[in-house]
Length: 401
Image (tube, rainbow, N blue to C red):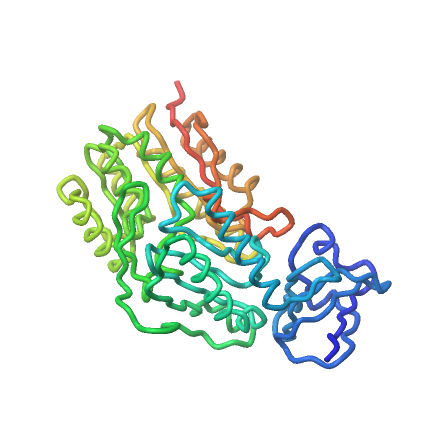
């Protein structure tokens, strides 16, 4: 059966031509030929120039997700194997430890809509697009085969395709085992820190691997320090600080489940005596700590994304400014602030400007130690804005005088 052809309107496809991975529904002039949603189609510019192949889904605003820009390449098993092998070989090159890492990062690995995380001997899969869903089990089988060739045994695979965004693709949310069931409480080691990861009920795929090297960078500032870790989740920054020799660490999170897991992880690392975890709303707690006159050598702000759309950016800016100015007030003169945003809508310029406003409002001067992004197992593909989402600053905070 010949492939259907999607033709763009004249003047459209600008982001696609700049390296973007998608065709938007309002950019399409016509679709010729027979197809089902999820099928591979050919994309043509308005003048018939072939721009590559991708899978189509009329239920989505991202009507075509590109798989290849080569008009002569067919998306078959050999093609998928090449993509998966390239993704795995890349991680082996750029990561100092692949026992736990992101193995496939969607569009940035040219496998749009698919995320695969490796936690020790378990794979967790998130499939968010109809077309890639058809290749999901093939991709998993290829990955396991490649890992076995490297002496790595995978004992189980769990699917976490339960994100709400699946509904925008006309797909049902789903979670469950792919293959034989196994214990979904998985112990991993990252930067020498042990964690229990709940791949079944934890946030996203169970653990945020993207902050690996940022946790290590902050840990270097924490020896002998009094540390406040806000939005601690399951305690990752707090535990890195503790193992680095922090005098005392306080971790805060609104999720009681997260706090319970953080306490369990502290015990796993023998840190329960020097670390306390508090279930509280950070926005409520920081002003209370300020009133009590509390001061810390290191304050860490690792909030969830305050905005997941362009329409709520203004509200998000207010939230980021508030926690940063509160955090700065709690840092001792000459102490350190680590602060980040994981929303790609809160871009580098806006995030930087917002921190600067917060510092000005509380009469603090910032000395930038370093600026970082996500770990390289979450590669940033230029032209694919969604792939660059994590902005991470470390500052020394100095009182104006």
